[in-house]
Image (cartoon, rainbow, N blue to C red):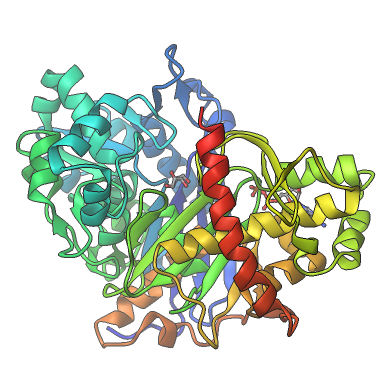
Length: 532
Ligand code: ADP
Ligand code: XUL
């Protein structure tokens, strides 16, 4: 089916703190945005930041009915604002990754016969075997992680199969915990969805498939065969494949919206539902990352997205199936010490001013005379290490640097770490590679210059507020056209182009190729010495 020029495309994002929607027209312009904040607009669920942190501090859940009610509220808001649902050609969306929803036996029958006179929350209140869904912030499944790794033959073996070693928040380990601690509820569960496929199920009026990309965040999907891994399923819980249903490509059209939405909100019967995916894969789509590109988001924490053809899963970082090209992969790297650490060094070494911080980067040479620093104010993820560790040009440990050298050591070190870990996962810098920068610190040209030099590639900036939502709308449009063989890139050719922000210094390659080798050695030493 071709895209309708007058049609609209909806992208939803069921994120941790809110439900958001972006509406895009056929010319790729955003024409409407709205959201529902869980804490303030649904106070009856008493969440903080959209979640409940339990007494053990490790268990973190969200009430599944809160997400259902948020959708009722969001659609009612849109209706109240006069939004014309009949113009929507397709919808898609995303959910916070890893969270899981447990549908009660009989819930699919309920979904298929929703009465348009009632709200979804009224209709579905008895449809969940587990009322409080585990979410990505949960870290209570360490035992299940250990068990899974020892069954499959170790952490690296699990990463080779599923793209990641065992992580507490990954869905399979959460399912194992539910099965072990609440066997009756597991028995009552007819279907297990991710937050993304749960949201798609609401629109579809039927259980929606888990897509390959979000499915890769479960420690259950074999990312090579793109099917559930038998050994992982068996190590997790009994009869799990039946409860998960077969996974499907992320660009699949799952069907049309259910008659409930046609009657209650005047959606067209033709409106297609494209598979929902995880929020990080959806952001990759929203940023329109292309083959060979790398995106660096410089926010509270720093994240790196890679487009990979031939991934090398490692003990750190995550490989997911690619949400916009089913034959490719993506990698996600998270670094905890991002902007907050840059702010601390700005305060200590640059009088609290970004201009002084930037000037220090301009006044110090590429390679910083061989000085290298590691600034892990809080426990870093990649590598697992903590504290501040400084080294001079001869790899001698030193107590610190002068203010200007410290600023450059911090920024160079942060970007060397990103390059090192990206390369470990199979990323190679080639001619034509682009680095796309987003997030708060991407407004700082001096920081972007260091990024460009360390990667020896041009850096572009993209304005992607709500990238996951926008990615949902883009994917809805692409899903409609994918059937006629058009690639994601073809469909979005006319979207706004990233802006060139920095090009590498001619001396950069030599300096940083050499420095990266030293950095890798020193990082190993720091990780070894500071392991908690
Ligand atoms: P998040 O989405 O994670 O909340 P943002 O992407 O909005 O974060 O980034 C916020 C951060 O951007 C702030 O913590 C601040 O340190 C950083 N920031 C803002 N302006 C600058 C600047 N000129 N130079 C460097 N960092 C900046
Ligand atoms: C990714 C992760 C979070 C969630 C919530 O692995 O746990 O980014 O997707 O945004």
